[in-house]
Length: 238
Image (cartoon, rainbow, N blue to C red; front, side):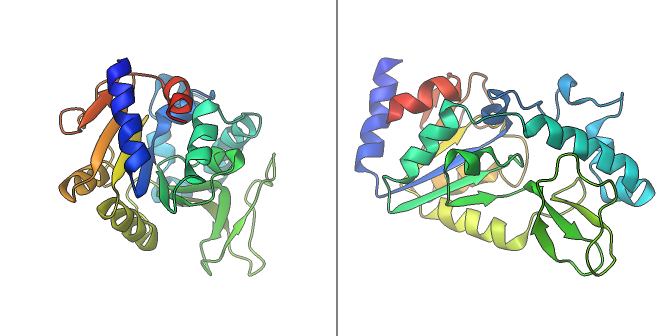
C-alpha cells in the first residue's frame, strides 16, 4: 500500500493540474446519511420517491418536510479530514477543480472555493415560477417558502428525472479533459454522467486514481486504486 501511496504522491508533485471528483462516501465519513442507503429512509418513505418533480408537484409540503429534516441534520455536521485536505490541495495548484456529487455544502465549509456542485446544493432554493435562485440556510425553514414574486420555492438540487445543469456539466467535462491527475474519492461510480468523468480524464491522458474502501465499476479502468477511507488517506497526500 505504501508503494502505491508514494506513486500517487509523485504524480501529484509533478502534475500541472488536478481534478478531484467526490461522492457520498466523503460526506458519509462526517455522518451525513447516505441518500441511497437504509439510513436514508425517512418516515418509511423511499428518498428516490420523494426526490422527483412529480412528488413535489403532488405534495410540496411533504417534500419540504423531508428536506427540512435533512437540512437540520447536515447543519450540525462538520467537515472531516478529507474535506480539509482537499481544500488544502486546492491552494497548491494553479489549475484545480473540485467536482462533487454531494449537495451538503461541506466542501465550502472546509474552505474549498473552486467547486462544481453537479447536483446542486441543499442550501440553495429556486423559484418554480421565475427561476431565480438564492441561498437559504434557515433551519428550520419555513415550510412552503415563497419567492418575492409569489412563486413556490423548491430545493435547488437535481431530482430524479431532471438533467444536470448544462453549465456545471460542461465545466466538469472541460476540467476532466484537461486534468493531469484526477482523484475519484468516495463515489460509487454508478451515477451518470458523473461516473463518465473519470473515463473522459483517462482518455485525455490523465493519471486517474480511485480512493474508496469498496470496489466500484470504475476500479477496473483507473491507473491506481487505493482501498482506503478518504478521511484517512487524503491528509497523507499533503
